Amino acid sequence: MASVLNVSAYLFTRIDDPAALRVTLRERALAAALRGTILLAEEGINLFLAGNAEAVRGFVDELRVDPRFASLETKDSWSDAVPFGKLLVKVKREIIRMDRPEVRPQDGRAPAVSPDTLRRWLDRGADDEGREVVLVDTRNAFEVDYGTFAGAKDWRIDRFTQFPDAASSHRDELAGKTVVSFCTGGIRCEKAALYLRGEGVDAYQLDGGILGWFAAQGDAHWQGDCFVFDGREALDAGLAPAGSAAGA
Image (tube, rainbow, N blue to C red; front, side, top):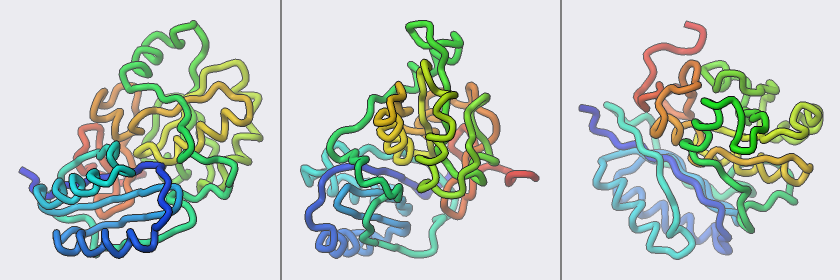
């Protein structure tokens, strides 16, 4: 059985002291022999960590003691080896760069749909009001090539900062429909849904992202694998390292 616990988590929350927090979290993670990346910004935290299961869970539990991170939820998966070469703890302007300062998820998130609700909609071919449901993949084109939802919109962006312009160019495709944005773990689709709603689109985010979908629904309505930014490269719908790369 795979013995390395991998966790990904993010939370948009106000952090007034990201530089000071960086020092504290780096010391804790090093003491726990964890590897991965922790990104901090005034808008929140985004982390990908791996190591001994007890050490990883202890780090997350201690983080949740801070009221700012009490609601932090992790997405867990397992591997035979640590997929990160070292530990990085960085302070950034944004934990996921969009370059749209008017989009402030730390002040309130867009409405979300659970995997169960989205599964019901996709099985029916419409939402609960009978409206057409459109899935929008907010990830980079190379990520989409590993796998995506059947029929999802893919605007072939190379970086997330291109998403707003791409959305504006395709706004007519979304008018009058129920739009659900999705991404790997939820962080990009959270900002994307807020941006779309600001443009007058009836947009929601998939709660938990693709990894949350895999955990709840497996490969239903999904085609392929899911790219991840670590040494595993991609996960299958069972949250295990995929057996083949895109295009293989």
